[in-house]
Image 1 (tube, rainbow, N blue to C red):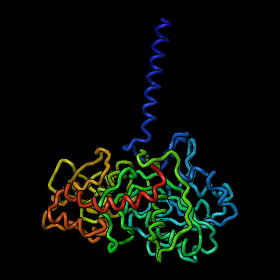
Image 2 (cartoon, rainbow, N blue to C red; image 1 turned 120 degrees about the horizontal axis):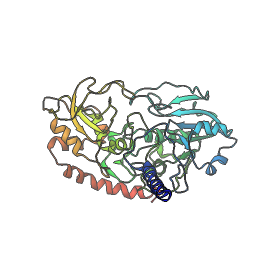
Image 3 (cartoon, rainbow, N blue to C red; image 1 turned 90 degrees about the horizontal axis):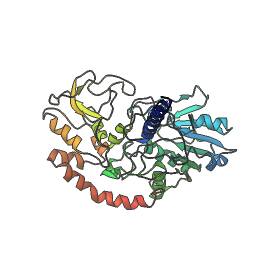
Image 4 (tube, helix red, strand yellow; image 1 turned 30 degrees about the vertical axis):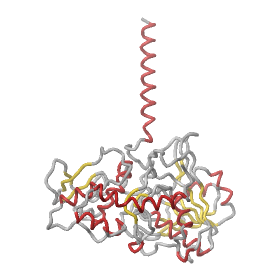
Length: 409
């Protein structure tokens, strides 16, 4: 009996150990939910952000007056916790003078397009300068007395996601004022492919400033190098740029963002679908804002009745969602397989479900698409395959440019 009990216990322990191993191995799968309170264990084989590798940059900050461009994603991951880079640098006696914050604010809680006022960080007492709204570029006065600017923000690799526009203006302001910029690189969760319509420069806006495809397959550090190298800053000036690179990263790496990069990208599925569903921002169709499944579904009250429906309500990140309090019929994409290309079928499906007496294209559709061609193609009834093929010549040209600035395989 004793021998049998020991044997059963042994097999039970083996089973539990195996189950635990499988569960732990899921932390980097693309369908896991993000959680701002999640911590990440760091091992020698895990991807290390630039911010984590303090040995590469701390000495460069000594005896300098520092400004940091940061938000809620600007953290240093430790073995069982994470610390905001501002708190970490202050603890290390680095002289931080102020913080610049992008769209959604320093804490990442503001709605898309919501103007954010300057303020004071309650925890540190540091002044926070908003770079969204009327003041998108640091002024000479705001940079007065600054010796070095640090840029540390998690991007998602999509042209109309505005953090790269903020990067452009910060680089430009630094170049104009002779201030070096240090960028702490982070992984691109959509870095495994290049696809989508290429922006035509006459349609340049804050949701697309450069002639690149919608999904450009570069980390934010690589992208900064391209801004410099292609002379996209005003008057073709160059920023004194230092990129602290990632460790153990390739463009094919699966990386689950531990902290949501903005209010309406709550998990990896939303981030992966964002390039394809972000077009709906420029239409009358709701893409899940006002629900807990942002950018994982789409619908409208005027769609044909279907089994799937939802009602957008004001919530975190969406105070006034499209079709608020109206029953929307649509499509549920929560369980869709991970995409490695822009899926234009969602947009075509929504257009075809919209009655002719209803408006579909909004004022910002051209800005999101980056050209007028996509709207015309949809109106003319081109297929998804035809539209996708039309993107390829400009994508191939871009890939040759992109290759010059890649840091990672």
